[in-house]
Each structure stands twice: as C-alpha cells, then as structure tokens.
Image (cartoon, rainbow, N blue to C red; front, side, top):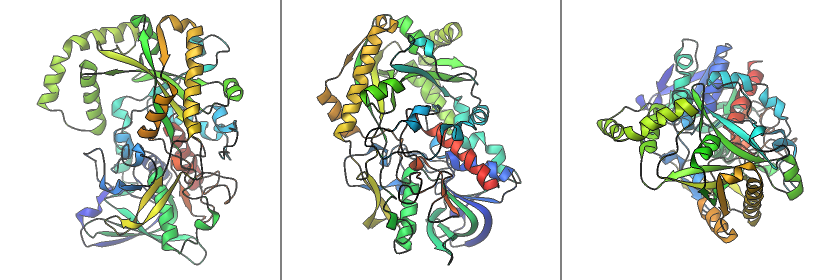
Amino acid sequence: MIRDLAGQPGQTHEVACDVLIIGGGTVGLLLATRLAAAGRHVVVVESGGMSQSGETHPLNEVVLLGAFYKGAESGRFRCLGGTSTRWGGAMLPFLETDMTFRQSGWDSEWPVTLADFTAYQGEIERLFGLPETPYDRPEILPAGAAFIPRLAKWPPFKLRNVATLLDAQIKAENGPAVWLNATATQFGFDPGGRLASVEARSANGGRLSVRPAETVIAAGAIESTRLLLLIDHQNDNRVFAPDGVLGRYFHDHVSTETARVTVSDRTALNRVIGFRFEGGGMRNLRFEPSAGLRAAHGIPAGFLHIAFSTEAPAGFDVLRSIYRKIQRRDRFSLRDAAELASALPWLSRAAWWRFREKRLLFPDNAIFGLHAIVEQEPIAANRIGLSPQRVDVFGCPLATIDWRVADSDITNVAEMTRQFVSAWRESPLGRLAEIQPAPPEALGKALSSFGGVYHPGGSTKMGASPKTGVVDKDLRTFRTPNLSVLATSAFPSGGGANPTMMLMMAAFRLADRLKG
C-alpha cells in the first residue's frame, strides 16, 4: 500500500508497527518486502515522491567544509526506488581480501566475514535475473598475474529499478505500508534508552507519528549519518557523541582517468573488454589487484577498467538514453523516435555484433581511456556533521561534509595504474592497445577537483565495540538497541567493487535477524 503524506496537508496520522524503515530506496524496499512477506507489520517513510524528475533534490543540500565532494548532491535520489532509478547496475561481491587484508595504518577492521554476506548471493542473483556464473575470469590473464580479471553482472534495465522489480510485493494486501513525502524529523526515546517514536512530516504540514518496535535507517550513507546526528542533536548529544565515532572516517572510492589508451586491434579489444551480453543482462570487465600485489606494494583495494567516451552523441548514446528512460519509467517522445531512426546504421551493425559476438559494439567515434577506482583511506578528519546555522524546510540542521583527497590517495592511484600498465604490457593483451599513463601531477589535480564516485562509507561504521564503531556486526547501533542502520556508511572500508550488491546482501541478512 502506498500513501502520500503530502496529499493530506494539515492532517496527523498515528500508527504502530513491528518495523519502521526510514528510506524507500534500493535496500529499504528490499528489506521492507522481505519482512512483510514474513508476516511483520512494516511501515516505510520515504522523503521523496513516486519519482524524481531532476538530477538533484532540495533535501540533499549540504554544507561543504573541505574540498568539493561531487557525491554530496549528485548520485542521490529521493523517491520510491531511490538511487536504483538511475544507477548503472554493476553488481559484484567484494573479494575475501577486501575484508581481511589490513592496510598498514588504516582503521578499517571488519567485524564480519565475506561469507556472512555471500550466503545471500544466490537469492540476490535470482531476484535480479542475474546468471549464476563465476565473477572471476582468470583465463583472461596468465596464471599468477598481478591483477584478477572479474566480470560484474548488470541486470536488464527494466529490473534495475527496485520499485518496478518489487511493485507487486509493495502493492500486495500484506505488503509494507509506504508513506511518500514523509521526512523523518523527530525522534523520541523511552526511559530505557530505546527509540519509542518517530515523527515524519511533509512540506505542506502533514504529520505521521510512528511507534515502532524496531527502526531501520536505510536512507543512504550521507542521510543516514545525518539522521543519527540529528538524534544526538535532539537529545543533548548524549546518545552517540560521547564515543566520538559517529560521522568520522567518511570515505569514498576516488576515481579518474589515469591513462590514454591507443588501440592497435579494435576488433580484438572489443571482444575482450566490450560489454558482454549474458542472459537478459550484461557484464563488463574490470581488473582488481591480487592479494600478493597488495601485500608487496601496499596498494589498497580498487579496480581498473578500459572505458570509452564519445565527443559527440552517436547511436550508442541514443540507445543508452532510451534504456535509461525504461529504468526511470519515463515515457518515450517523438524526439526519441527521431533520434532512434537517425541511429539505425550503427544500431544495425551493433545488433549483428551482439548476435555474432555477444558483445556491445564500440561506437564509431569512441575514445578510450584507462580509469582507476581506488579505495580511499578512512581518515577520522574526513567527516559528516551538522551545520550550526543552516537548516532545511523542516527546521532540521543540514549535513556538513568535511572531506579531502589525501596525498596517500593520489599515490595509491598512481601506483595501481603503474602496476597495471606493466602487467598489461607483459601480457598477451599488450598487443591490442598501448596504455600511456598520465603524469602524477595531472592525477593529483584531477582527483582533488573531481571528488568521489558516489560510493560513500565509514561514517556509521561497523565495529567490535562503541569505541570502534557506531553499529555492531549485525548493523544494530550500540547505543540504541532497537535502532539499526542499513547503508554503506556502515562499511569500514570501500572494498574493490561497487558496494551495492554487498549492501543488498546485508539487507537480506538484516531481514533474517528482524524476522526472528
């Protein structure tokens, strides 16, 4: 059942439930439908509406205190389905090394194992229509190579939007009660320190008062952190602030193009690195540093991939635009039809290439580059806080982000690139293209001005105790026993892959705990 709080201005509603989920995005809906199917009474409050037309949302406004952080507003969506209405779709579990290798000097210890997450891998793959084939493809590079070739899995566009994927479960008679345009603004506690009530409001005066037995904040890394800070703000900083962990250790993957790729054999390169069609979805190739390379050179987790860009829109861009409209559930226009017609020559060749090679054909005007996406060191000084002056439309403080790219981050990106270029040249792939690294000073300038790639973490991180983390290994906050956080902000480190699939598996794991 879906209701809109903004459609009832000035009215107040009161409900009680087993589980309140703050955030109706990617993992909030996964958790809600799984719990509802198990017979739990679930309420979801989502601060956005059915969809978000623009690329930014006014409630995502933050105050930047450090360097420019692109992920502060970009890549964040408030609507039913959240970021899944826009995300690229790459799904890939971390490597065991990502959670067990202790980078020298880093405060990033995981209190859980990879197996705690991957126990749910098969369920996630079946839900999104992913093939149950291996992620690692060692045959692409010689045995013992310094990098591990891996193929991420991308669901079909029509299945990437979680709101579309779970539409029947959301609207079912026993489904979760979803309230749109309902922003959590007030948190009340009982004398025993348990979260007893949450008030959500719409901008036009609607109010929803919820009395939950359990509450899960699943509002994205930045907003989930802000809401915990808001709890402290409303309770004289007595809940989380004394431990000095909440908001700190904020990190992202830092990324930029690190080398120009000059192609020698375009057809052969297309067969190796071109997007692969498998089942109803796609797969793309990336290279992650091996455990041996990381230990020998002190390189953090991350990955590199060869990507193409186009200086002017072409057939590929038209096709991608149409598929993204399908993902957002937008309508086609006459302009879309006209652009599609103009792209028919390339589309015809691409269709044949897909049938023959099961690959996406490179655009005719493609320019190739090597991109590095590298885990950033979790530093306590990189943090999320609350603004003492600026507030949102509900009178709640805006989030502040004090974030910078460290010299060590730049060094790590340069070193990972150098190691990969060496491995590429020494392998059979070296005959397909020449890779020329950018100078270190150019990397430093690009990383410092570009910001992260929308994979924030660390600011409500897992830990073994309140002195090392905000949440425990089961995502339960140490200081409020019936409050959990389901966001990448709970991840102590970034890992070598996009964190979305790991968070989805964490949602299923959390659901099994709350079902009990």
